[in-house]
Image 1 (spheres, helix red, strand yellow):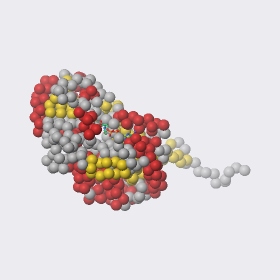
Image 2 (image 1 turned 90 degrees about the vertical axis):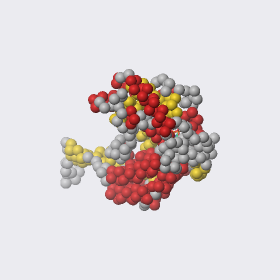
Image 3 (image 1 turned 180 degrees about the vertical axis):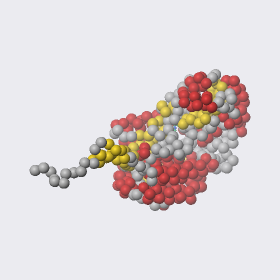
Image 4 (image 1 turned 90 degrees about the horizontal axis):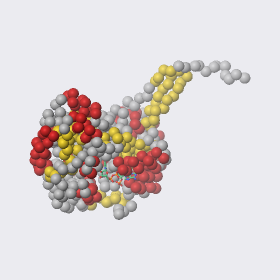
Length: 462
Ligand code: NDP
């Protein structure tokens, strides 16, 4: 049982303590919301260009501390240093993108009989962001920075295992000149601080990223207050490989091994046309054996540890020792290591083929033709991401229309770009982050009618 008052941050590669951080209580959350509620009107009242200028200065400050942030991510989350640099850069880039949005958050004027309607995009007030541990910096940024740019104050609760980069971002925001209490980070436990943020009547919206199970609870609690919620939840994404594809790029193992598989977009169901199944199996066996797993701070490392002992136990539960599988290697402890693995004897309705494992484990499943590929791809309660590989443009178009997922890639494994909307179909979530509409999602639309009838100059009739 974890200490309710303290978070112990472990380096998942060594199990050494990196830091201990006080855990926010329900009262701490309530006090933070009061401070945010007081600070928000002044922030919203800034001219958009001035808000944008402060956010750009924040981006410059993040840029000046990029390596420090990346190294912190390596230590608290076990991410490879290359990935961690990308993550810090993503936070900086999103700040710049959101800053531009602040200056372009426009309403409409709509001529109507008897006058005009004018719409305004008004900030919601205080936004609560609940982030997971798998991408601590980017996901904190995606929820928080567009909300700030739209004139909201943000209270962010990072995951209890990975609070350090978020805390540092909040310090850098102050250093850059953002007003106090506009961006607050409160590390704490989900069942206390997280729930308190969700239940607080003065928190106008919740942005939650994490498991579908917790997301469901967050949505139920928000429903009681009719509070809008954005949910970015689990995934079990297909990688659909037709026989005409270039197998060496289509079967890149980092499509499911990136971040040790702790990635909601990981392509963990490898669907391969049966005529090239054997070739795919041989390629994957060699590719897994070649993956360099080890110290995430070493520039040559390609895959680091899992986040925690709990996550390691969870991943192990999906991979019995005698399961038919292709396996790479991983260091022994200390640290939470699991080898790159592709299960080859799993049925499409098996547990490992249906549930989000969140580790370096994929299943290999054959399909016969295009129809069968689409059926298998959609045979999941999730709908976040996916890839399809073929040289046939017509087939690429048909399959990308037929697969029910929010983010698909044709002849690519790339999912996330801060310029484009990101989010899931089905039980992968609700709403979209990033992209051109990211700021609008943190506003209410107000519609004002202005009559074109001149008031009488003679005053009210006696
Ligand atoms: P959770 O979904 O439980 O946690 C995500 C965030 O929500 C954390 O900040 C957590 O806090 C917080 N939280 C937990 N319970 C509540 C609550 N009742 N109300 C409000 N906030 C809450 O994920 P876990 O970390 O427990 O991971 C479990 C599994 O979820 C993983 O194995 C993986 O399969 C999946 N997962 C999926 C993610 C995705 O992006 N698809 C991301 C993370 C996990 P705290 O850290 O204190 O628990």
